[in-house]
Each structure stands twice: as structure tokens, then as C-alpha cells.
Figure 1 (tube, helix red, strand yellow):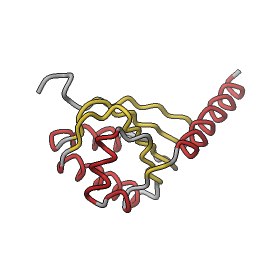
Figure 2 (cartoon, rainbow, N blue to C red):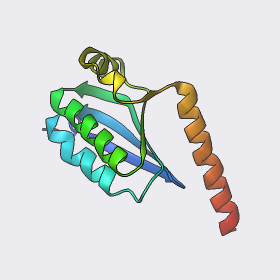
Figure 3 (tube, one colour):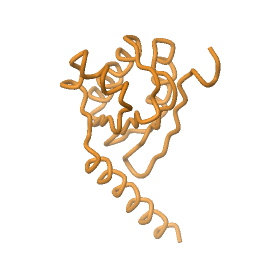
Length: 128
């Protein structure tokens, strides 16, 4: 599989909030990538999965999202999916997973990102 087709995840953390920005294809082969990104995080209150750059989402990828949902629930962490691409949203709607996985509104995502910014500012002030 070429690099452009594989799943790439960029992680940003602030306090107890992590944003996993996904780019590429969430397919069966991506389960390990998604799993490794999740388990490498320290304990978090919220994990935000940004799906805006997801080009493909197949049944294996949907299974990976369900796995991540179960893993975060087991670890007392909120999982929020934000800004799914049109294709990702359509797949979540067609399979009914939109009722299981929490897709946050833009306002929710802005609130989380503002919390991250204020936490970072507070951490920077303490460090100064």
C-alpha cells in the first residue's frame, strides 16, 4: 500500500484532551495504526478523532472506530468524532453507527479546542 493511501495520524495533546487528526484511509489494515495511536496516549478525559481528511472508510475501518469507542469507554474516556468527510459521514449513517459513535458538532469541537488552548496557555504560564 502506498504512503498516500495509508492512514496517517497526527496527535496533539493539551492537558487531558488529545486530538487525533486522521488523514487517508481508515480500512482494515489501519486498525493497528489507530490502535497504536490510542494506546500510546497517557490517560485522557477526551479523545477527539478528526475525520475531515479521511478519504476511505470500509467495514474494517468502521470496526476500528467501534474498537476505539469500546477502548475509550473501558478507560473512562470520552470519544468525539468531529468533522467527518462526506464519505465518512455517509458510511456512518448507512451503517447506523452514527447512533453509537458520538459525532460532535462544530461548536463542540471549538469548545474542546478552546479548552486545549487555555490549558496550553496555563501550562505555559506555569512554566515561565
